[in-house]
Length: 217
Image (cartoon, rainbow, N blue to C red):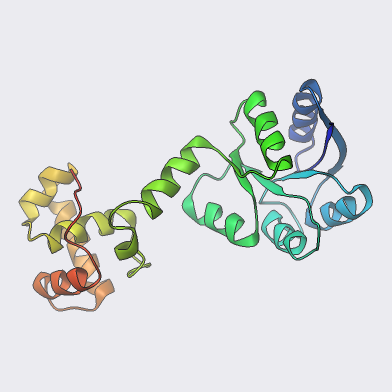
């Protein structure tokens, strides 16, 4: 069975290359191209594709808003975000909007084709680097604890874990391979964000939230 795909990206040369890659793959047909979210919605309504590939940052209606709009439609096709953005904020935005996959623009043609086939068969499709970060963020022993302080950076979470374990700054620096001054600066930022007067109070709050039992080495 041929998988019918529409693609959305505001860079003509990227669309040209993506179409060429997909149409070289067995069983995939590109049935339309869009330059922004608004034209993507119209294209999906007209062509009823099996899978949508869309960039996230486009002029006008961006990819995230388009994914949200599609997700609200009964029988909408699965959407894969295909973007240059590898940071957690863009990944979260796409997944919360309803994306069923997330690929980076550096992906190989075979990886993109495989993701399209996976999405068409009802499976999710993620870039390996995105999958690793999702597992680290949500499946680790301190995953629940990390959600208690969403304003902290990953580095601040790591330092707070060791503060909760009772480590001094020098030990934290050794374990995380940081300079002593960096640890002091991160600790000061932690105290401010947690609104506590000292590291003892920070350790108590952290332990109450579930920190202190994980390993960071």
